[in-house]
Image (cartoon, rainbow, N blue to C red):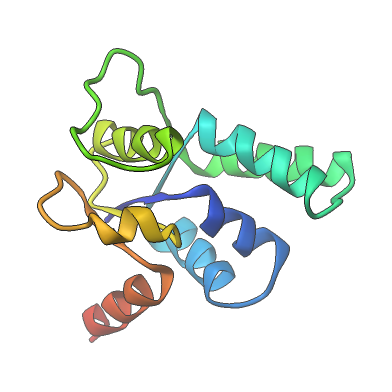
Length: 137
């Protein structure tokens, strides 16, 4: 599967232990990880600012993700016609659609609330994990 991870999932995966870390590991090893430069820039800002991760560790995380992920370029693609409070959420949705993602994994409630009738399936980390476990033989 082609899986686009939202910034909040990647930050949680790198900053804490838990389901998001497991998801990142599984997607890197068994699926196609999709990210965008916007997600990567936000990740670096949040890790360095909010979590106080040293700059060299932030750079290393960014380097790893750029090597492991297909990076989406959304320029010139139409934005989905979805009413969301945060314009950045519309951009993330547009990037997931532009990448031909099978699934967008996010913890963002606004995106999860509009998940029906969109050109990409949207799931929370827990929903995505359950979906993956259902697929295992």
